[in-house]
Image 1 (cartoon, rainbow, N blue to C red):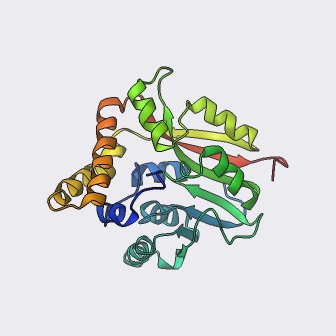
Image 2 (cartoon, rainbow, N blue to C red):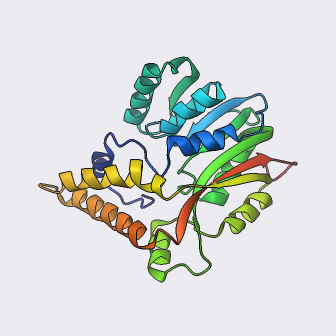
Length: 254
């Protein structure tokens, strides 16, 4: 997914109407959201929101308006319809924009939620880029992939390195966050089943349905998808997703 040479038309063909764009579950989003300390005044941004499953949970649990940001218009349209159906449309605003170039004024955001998307800029670069937007004591919640062992299998290490993900142990990412002006309030491990039920299972089924008649670009995307699922099946005990709950502290490197 991090490969800049990807054919995005083929990618979105595979991902069309998938429930979510990364490992996760409504239950896990709710668990992390309910464990947050009281929020300071300010906006809530859900960055890289995709089809917005977590956006709906945040609006429902926090009872606060949420600005859902993504570059792919069809995701935002799906989210708007889902919000209307759930009776949450007054709490959810969609915005088609890159999180590399957000329109928000510095120092006005109470909570940045970055579920399964901080790997795109990289964990440290994402923290540096978004920290100035936060109010004093503002929160940043990001989920990212980590190693669960000190000696990950070489094949798994090569896979994540080729994907561009900066994978390390939880303790290392916590140290990186502290160095960027954040207090780590907590970490929450995503259960392994949350990778499968609403992410890999529907992707695998759709990929199989698309195989017949797929052209070269789509075949390349399907092959990469199958390879990723195979890596998870064989080495999924060595890596996992963790939510990092961070609070902006001090003057930091704004």
